[in-house]
Length: 289
Image 1 (tube, helix red, strand yellow):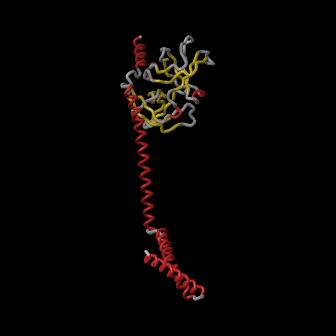
Image 2: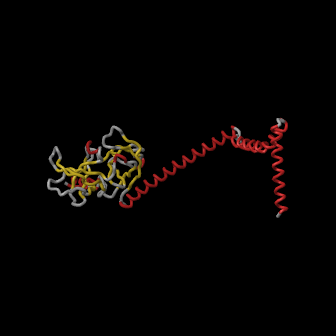
Image 3: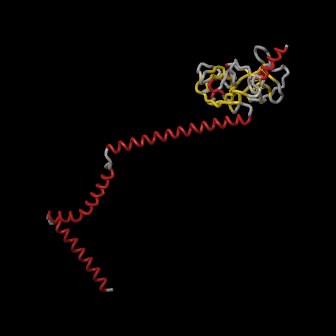
């Protein structure tokens, strides 16, 4: 124990002597000694600082040439364009699948229909009744007066046809004359539009009996009369019942099931089992007479 204590004491004493010796040499003004001691004490720290600075500079300096970086940037840009095209294709395919699903839902519910799914490719800003152009025409079998509908209900009819497109007039138009019935009671009338109602996606049920029993929220569907529109296509619901300001006859305001102002795709019904039936029957009756 005494030997250990003596060894420690000796080390402490040597350290103190060295410290005072260094201090004395520095205070004596010996520049060479000062430089030696400064170099001896600071060199390790300078080496550490220099190494750190070099590593930082190496990290900041580009390891590739301008041509390599330019080519890499070009490749990344092309990959980005490719991914954007894939994303666009994905959304296009998804939209087509949604349209086909709507098409098949209509076909499942109406097996006697021959239908063409189609897209809106144009709207006339000067058209006050939300008419539009579809991407199907006579080459697809489309004819004037073919009904146009969505999965929500009747939209209108084909009023003009070219080889690859057609123009649709809507049931918001005053040119519309669609035979309909009140689903609850079977009471009949005619759907026709006007400019004021069209702005709110509304149309009118006219030719109601003065003794009608139509109520608010009654369901309105096509009657099939005339053989132009299939029977039982949903049209809308009664929103209001009032007297026509000109005829004084009762009129029902109809809120449509489909917002025609924002339609992007529709189905053209090119054939159905009762197409033209009543018209043909009337012609036959006239001939027999």
